[in-house]
Image (tube, rainbow, N blue to C red; front, side, top):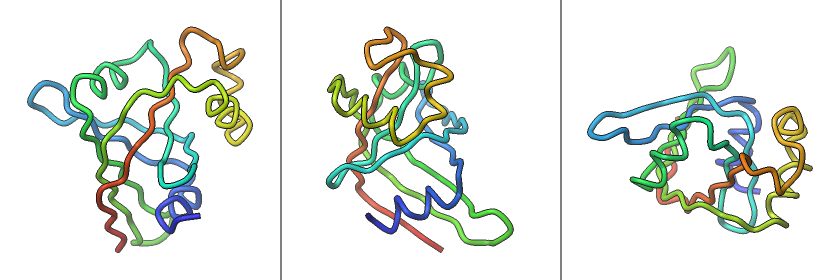
Length: 122
């Protein structure tokens, strides 16, 4: 696993920053997985995050470890991913998602693949 993924898992939650028109928009996330060189984020079609990632694929992921001053900033390119096997893996790796989605074919369950461009850990 990458250092970035390990860091995010240790944090438990993190913020995904998107572009909303010409303004930044951030919201907390908790479900993430790593497959090959990509990070994967789960979201749903009932919020603005997926619309913003579709309109402008440039995102950042930011997190701080609890009770420390250690933080991470990941910049990347997000693309929607409809691969049912990857969705199933995400449900298995992040059981909290079962509270929101009945199955991988749930019409509201969206998965985004993030191609990591830069990682800054301090």
